[in-house]
Image (cartoon, rainbow over all chains, first blue to last red; front, top):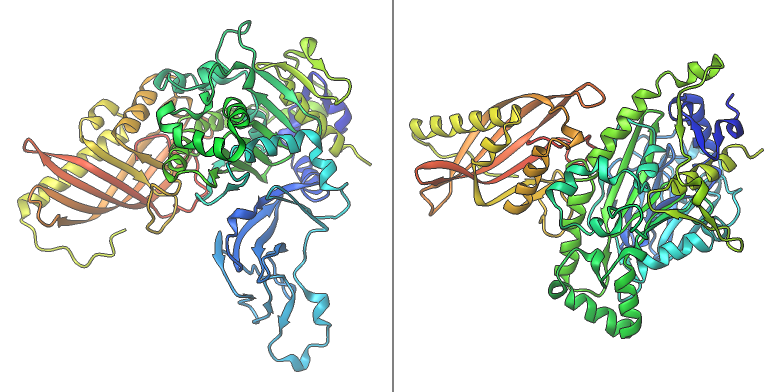
Length: 424
Length: 172
């Protein structure tokens, strides 16, 4: 049994945590079952009867909108003999019918019909589809806590987590984002924790993404993260609760720098924001842009993209992503966001494949970590000390901020991980 | 994808020329000969790998690859930097192409829609060392430009388009 308190120190982490099957099993219990995880966004289910399938940790679920418009997260498993009810990624239904013995469930998960009822002696109400102990939503982002014994969602997100979601949603003139561009799954043969670590690492851009920087040099990352160490004011922030951010706002020198499109092409969007919020607020929003942040443990707000990290096995993960679409803007603007998303994320994009291969190389490098630790030998660990000495802690909020290249974000992830994994 | 009926009869010389073109293109892609491959495309090329097994408008949804000429040029430029870690070293590949069906584009004597099946083995030697298997159907739009066939569009429908899929950073 791993001593998580010993394995995770403020300045380093034991590599065994990436490879050990027992650690993975424990994570599925503590992080993905007893804590909150992101499930989906309400806009994915436009109409009553729309459903998508997903996994919370390893637990398969159906995320569905019922006839009354209410959202549910249901176990994707017949309550009779356990057959998978929905095996596509998404669909539309009036009810869920099991293919094994024809048991029928309403969109809200109630058992409605049992063929040959003569031999059925149970109470139907007791055999509805299993559902999470707690379900919560914030601005359309739906989260579930399977076990039901986590503190309320409000506390899980905290002021920091809510602010990150607010900053994304506020970029829409209506205040609502839309998830309707389709999800892309990127299989990465590495531990799931390496994905949020890499998504929120402000130190690796110049190396891992050198080819992108060289071949598409007009990217706004030049300004946000690639400036010289002394002159770049961007921040690596730990908001607490494992919610971490690379805050590029201080480095943007113009309004809408993050859009990556000419002022001309962005003009209709600017006007829509001004009409909704007034010129002053619109200017602030355009300047700030979307967050680049992690909502612990599995949601990445990747600027105008959402990504979900799915753990599959100690050495296998899926990085799912989609593009954020804004309500109340011209369609050509939304289409540009799609094209930017295709350039940045996914297995054939210009950015994430290089992160993927880096994580896959790390995974292999830690193959011997468990044996080393068991033998009392060291050496297979991750050093996360960068910027520890220059991190600024806000006493009131507990927020920590460092230089954008500092490992403040990684330390923030692991601080929360340590807390969750070592709770009694 | 096609959903088309049987292809019309076509003269043997044209069929041979088109098949030879497909095999040549495949060899350049297999061997990561980016510059030579790039000379095969037209200025208005569309290079598309859908992220779903069904038809959809790539303008309105995400795809794995949805390149116009300029995006394709960036893709190739990135591969040629020598810094594209996902292709360092380049994947070793061989693909087999078969079931070639040729449909002349109506009203355009110089254009063909060519459908073919492929099986591609990729040695992903950058990290995992896995021998990965890719398979699907390719739809080329081939146009004769200055007497030579060129790729005006290439659509690759992976059998496992709905994913998840691993890194796809070579020319497919």
